[in-house]
Amino acid sequence: MARTKDFDENEVLNKAVNLFWLKGYNGTSMQDLVDGLGISRSSLYDTYGDKHTLFIKALESYQSTASGKICQIISSVLPAKETIKQILEYISSGLLNDQTHKGCFMVNAEVEVAPHDRQVNEMICQNDQQVEDAFYLVIKKGQDTGEITNPQDARALARFTFNTVKGMRVTAKSTNDKAVFDDIIKLAMSVLD
Image (tube, rainbow, N blue to C red; front, top):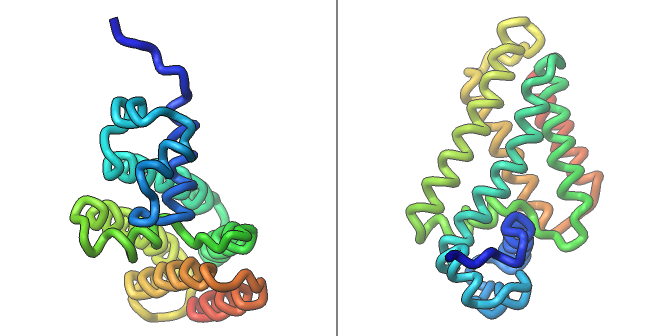
């Protein structure tokens, strides 16, 4: 008969996200995971396999949560430029409220792990494409209605906007000066005019 777990797997996974996010993949030891997750080493291996598998599950969990809010904003009935502004402000707000300057877990994984790990690289590329596609759809809609007057290709504008988001997430690792992010958002929005 299988033993029942005496811990909540989702709660443990959330703790893993925060630990990997704060310390990075390479900076997080198995002992850090045992201590930080509050479960035994055997429970950790039995439930999540190895450190890499737990990291992948943590990335998937983070991606699902982060994408949910962005998709909610994108699916709203707001005009295109307001939709993009709300996404940029939502991202900025989350970054500014983080006193530990963790940045973005996905971007951190992209820089630290993806160059050496095909599975993480594929996850990051898929996530990036989904976000870029979402920006593309909003920008294309805005161009079709005449709200966005920049004649540049909608795909190029989507890539620029998404790159701006990534830049904000990296900048947040060293500053939480609201004026910096306000300037970035203001300039990014001016590109759509």
